[in-house]
Structures are given as structure tokens and as C-alpha cells.
Image (cartoon, rainbow, N blue to C red):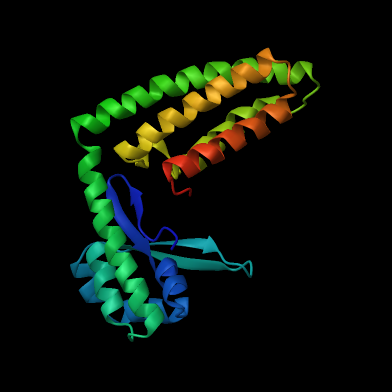
Length: 217
């Protein structure tokens, strides 16, 4: 199941839209339940709402919900099979997020994050060489290689951001970036095309992911 619990400023939350999509219940109905019980929701914390563009192009209000608010909301929903499965997954992900927030404040996480920055710097230096290499081969968008390789590394590690990665994910990311670093360096030494180098790197990471049993994002 997709990511149900989000993190901002060390605060875990979900949204009314995530709950609507996950339960198969209309977003309008979910928001109606919130409005009908607004005082109870306010008792669990401030409700934050913001407009976003819906698929139809019209602005749609989405409400952020902290863990107590989300927990109360799902108790108001009828227990169909899809709703029960969603409730279980939401509770699980809130628990995992609380565990991660505690881990993120540990000395071990801080040290691991610092080491990952060093590894990222080494990879970035190699990608800088690759950008120049690709430009000489006629690439007009070589500067995008930084983003392309970052996305590839993050996807393989199963993360969207280093700051929201666990210690285990950061360690995996360091291994992934070391693979990329050496793969890019060897590809340039062998005179391969920059596009071929990317495909080789991607294949190496797929192999690593299978061997290490990594769950990609």
C-alpha cells in the first residue's frame, strides 16, 4: 500500500484526501464527518486545511489530520473490508513514523546522515565529470544528470528524501551511491556513451536491489 502517513517538522500526519482514497469513500463525505464533529477534532489539535487543484481543475480543500484526529475519524467509518484493511495499514504506518521520529533524534542517525553527505559529495563530484563528458558527446541537457541519478539512487533505496530516511535506508543509500560512483567512472574510462552508462548503472542497481531484497519506492 502507498504512503499514508506524511512527515513535516517531525510531526506525523495524514490527510482527508488520503483517507478518502484509501477507504473508497467520497472526499466530500469524509470532510462532512469532520465538520459534524469539529469540536472533537479541535480537541485533538489544530485542523489545518489548504486548497489544491482537483482532477477536474477546480480547487479542492484538503485537511491535514494528526494521529489522534485521524484515529477518531476512522472510527466514524463503516467497517467494510476495504475500510478495515485501510485502518490497519494507517495504524501501522503511524506507529512506524513515531518509531522513525525517535530514531531521527538519535546520535546514530546523526552520524549516519553525516556520512551519507560525504558519500553524496563523492558521487556528485563524479557526476560533475559525467556532465562535462556528456556535453562533449553532444548532450544539450547534461546538467539534468544530477537529478536523474539522484532519483535513481533514492528510488532504489526506497526513499523520497535523505532527511526522512531510516538509518538502514541511509546505509543502503551509501552503498547505492558507491555503486553509481564506480559504475560512472568505469564507463567514462571505457569511453562508453553517457546514455549507455546510465543503463549500465540502472542494471547494476536492479541487481543489487534483488540481491539485498530492497523494497523500492
